[in-house]
Length: 373
Image (tube, rainbow, N blue to C red):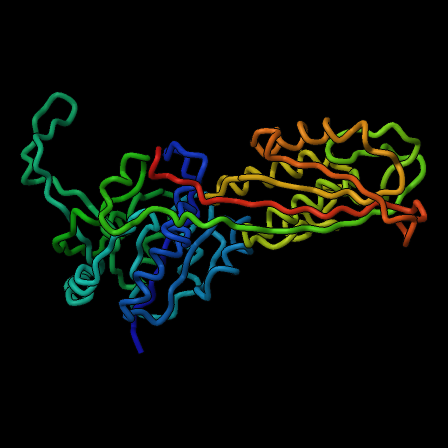
């Protein structure tokens, strides 16, 4: 059994990255970057456990991708690391950033071989360019570029992080607390993704897969007198609406399920639970906007969508075009790729008795192609 736990930090908001996709969700083949990196480390078979920190809203979705230990992150890198350390039981811990995607097994082995040399073992890369601090030229032989992963004694790292001071890496906190640091040679291939152009410096990653992802959705809502009817994002001129926690737009609800189905991200109840007062009476167009934003952040783009509305009442022929343009704008696709159909059930069932409406929806997605940016 290994005496080392791996912590991978992936809870950041990618504010400097410059794409609508969060960098940890960039697709490498079919896999999001966080999973690709975790799998590379796992393949080394050197760790007793692999812990990944993630934004609290992303943990439930990441659980569908992997069996790694997922921990809700904090507001900062250091806060996330402290939370992850609560789950570490081994005497040593290796900490790395998901954004450092190309870590060779030989570098990990070099860190482990030196684990008794100090309280933290740190990979470094020498600086080849002239270095100027303010107006003074500095001897570049005295300057080092610090990388991750870093191997620390778990107890020492936990104690070093019990501070309100924020450090950008583990070794700085450990040295500041009076403990020791040992350097080993790092790797230029272990480049960190901070900005979009950094992707060209990573030899191990490949383009996203070109697969088309398909999902479907279905929803029904009963009528309720005295409510405003919203259907397909459009107000329908009748004196009744839908019985629902939100505004009851059954067409948008089915469409959201289709989108989430294609993305493998669960269903509308998982994203917008109906026992949460945040969504009580909410405009379903806002739910669709938030869904599309989540898809984009997770590295997915909508290709097309199609809905079939089954309704004996109200009559919808005058509204289909408005639904089409409204939904297309929310999906950020041309109206030509958003189809809206309406039919009846030939007076059969609850729909035929004019008690409610049912909607079927389908949608297709592609992975966001970051190689073209």
